[in-house]
Length: 139
Image (tube, rainbow, N blue to C red):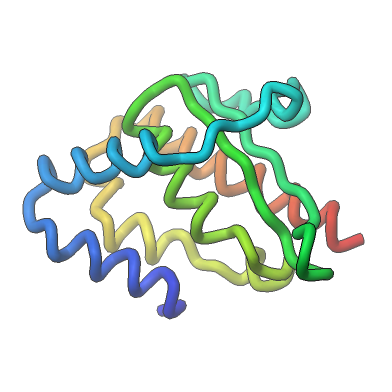
């Protein structure tokens, strides 16, 4: 397991039950830096999501070859997932982002058990969008 993913899973395991994990995800979403309106474009929208989700990748301003992300969502729980992914994917090189196994993350957080099938599809669409954006920046 990737060290960053392992750390996230360990933090969630300390919370115990799903209700505590849910509240923590909502908190993470509330603390997510506001996404500039200029980044909330159709190109950055994750259309497969039931919620209104935007993610945007940009070259890191201080570290060449690394990527930073912005993200936002209109649903509390999914905004928390976006916050987790923004934190996990930011400050990495595109090849590191591509190599991240989010299945390990989502299984460790038990998201599959607690999100509806439609939301589950949407969460993977967010990941796919973020990875695709990193690939574009790698070129």
